[in-house]
Amino acid sequence: MSLPERNRVADILRTETVGGVLLLIAAVIALVMSNTPLSGVYEGVRDFTFGPESLHLDLSVGSWAKDGLLTIFFFVAGIELKRELVAGELRDPRAAALPIVAALCGMAVPALVYVVTASTMGGSLSGWAVPTATDIAFALAVLAVIGTALPSALRAFLLTLAIVDDLGAILIIAVFFTTDLDFLALGLSLAGLALFWFLHHKRVHGWYIYVPLALVIWALMHASGVHATVAGVAMGMLLRCTLRDGESQSPAERIEHQVRPLSAGLAVPLFALFAAGVSVSGGALADVFTRPEPLGVVLGLFLGKVLGVFGGSWLAVRFTKAELNEELAWPDLFALSSLAGIGFTVSLLIGELAFPEDPALADEVKAAVLMGSLISALVAGTLLKIRNAKYRRLYEEENLDEDDSGIPDIYEKDDPAYHLRMAEKLERKAAEHRRLAEHAARPGATGTAESTGTAGHTEPAGSAEDAPRDRASGDDPA
Image (cartoon, rainbow, N blue to C red; front, side, top):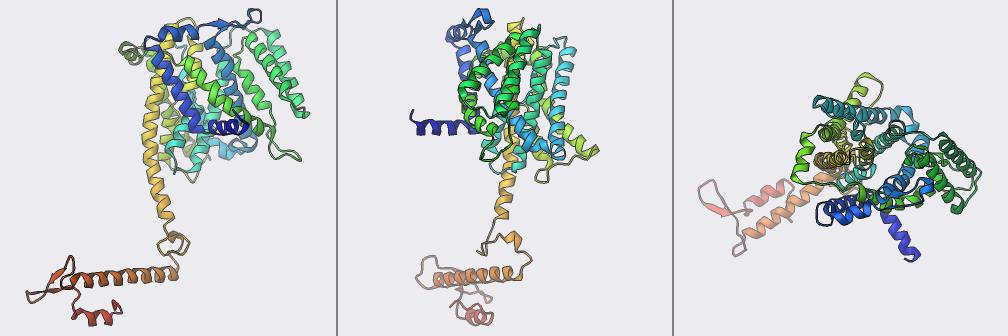
């Protein structure tokens, strides 16, 4: 492509709705290929292994997407988290308190719902972390498509919640899904991160320096036993988000602007393509609602997220000094709580990590992630559409300017001049309607109107007898 074309495509890929649509398309393609005669081709490509074995990087295509490409997504998430901590909602503890509490409760309650469901039905507790994550790309895409008239505070709340949620998911992956640690590789990876920070803060420029260094950091983190995506988050959070003299953009903002199209247009869709390929036959769908592990995931994503996010927020406002943004109402937050149940990307990743020794169960759990996310998206979409219609009506009422003064009427209700202008406008309309009625009542006029007189006979509406009365009242049709 030419440079203008590349820039145009990149700008499109930065749009939240486009990223969500690409993610959805990739998931649909994976599901179609996995449930048609193309399943053999799909599995052959997904399981094809390549890479240097000496560096422990002889990975399948699916693993490269999960451990490699998804690191780009977490790199962008790390930048977003750093920006929110430095200049966003998370900088102000009072503003950040409610979404942080909502995010933490929105992780704890789904895990609890899974544990109760699985233990009651005699299932494995290994998948407790699967329903804890919220997918930023999907959730923001749904909100952007449906919530065109919703308050901007709702998006800020969701973004803050999702970022804290992602941080929690990263910590869960690092702590609970780290196998045998190679301390030498981990130490070298941390040394690489220190070098990355030093070069960046000394204003050393050049992608040819940072990209190879990032690859080395990632490879060492992968070899250490810690999930490789943690390296992406760490590098994102090391970028500087503040401005210095002579800068119009911070390095974090500039790099995020450059990398986001790669994340939204390549990394996340390819991960979804190789992670969402599960069987959705009648038997498999029945297993989702009958077996303890997948049922726990569905209930955790749908019910657990609603109870956690909404219930945690209400309790925080009720018993602490936390306050709901004045632009929002509790029904808005309830709809948002349903939206938080979309746990696509990170939930699929944790689903694979939770059951490494049981691929069949891992597939059932991934099917449950898809089902729980779909239910949450449909319910949230319906609720948000209702709230959006209400806010659209409010917007139209608040911007109504019937007196054509250039100022919305809602701000002029106490101004006598407004009422005089409206009276004059209505009088002109009334006079025009009288003139039309008089014209319609003339003999031979189309649509002659007749009215019944008091003596039982009919006479034309707007006759001469009415004229003096009209003039006396100041409503002369002339």
